[in-house]
Image (cartoon, rainbow, N blue to C red; front, side, top):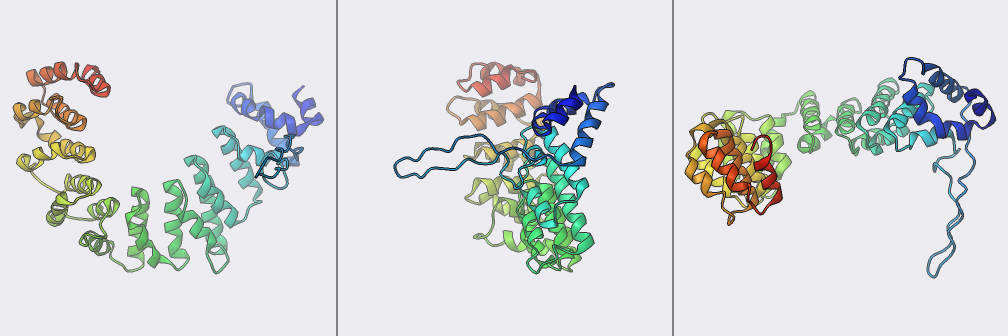
Length: 349
């Protein structure tokens, strides 16, 4: 029956049943259906009929819109529909089949990697683009369009591929721009590329955070990743920065660098107007929670304090344990903030 449906109307059968067949193919007796569909898609890619959507009528100030194709690609094929499916399994399956056929050049592979939101599918496209660049050179053109496209990808792994490709493209000096990327993976690749080009990522990151006008959160995070204990005073100075995100990044960077926890300096940071700073201060104090005085923390549970301060104080009291943790749970169980009530009444509260 399935073979007959494929022979009679391959386009409609494939687009309708690929999601089901992919799941049946995982069963002990379902592999034959997936093999049948694989053969149909590899033999000759069926072309879909145009999308039977009527044109939008013209209105005042807006012209009529012609009927569109189903996929937006030319030709309008079943594989094009599968590549843009909302089903992740279908999209991954289509990507693998497309890569086996080798129909896309390096520019198109890089473009698909950059716009794809699914990490696994984007990795398939990006690795194929990297392999093509390794075999034929970085894009084969003077503009290195494929490398630039990868650098603008949504998924961190795609941007990391772009940073890695900069060295092969003879553009390793540009890797310094990505030392402050929002992804730790991209920052690590950028440090490697800068070192391969003979640069010093530590000096470049330090230069950024020493200039108050240029410092921003990911610059602080990037510097902390290559800093040593001797750099703790430089990060500590950023705790007075006017931007809460910068203060939080400095605290996060100090956590692995400093030795004994300075309770007197960190405890007031629970009252910081920035929720991220209070959260990072609580994380810094967590290892010393059993040695903290319960009274100042309990005082921060009052309804007059900001919700993020109450949350940070409660987490420290819960880590401290004992009667203080029980009193804190009882106090927050009546808190006007529903998220704090849930925290107090939850398994760890």
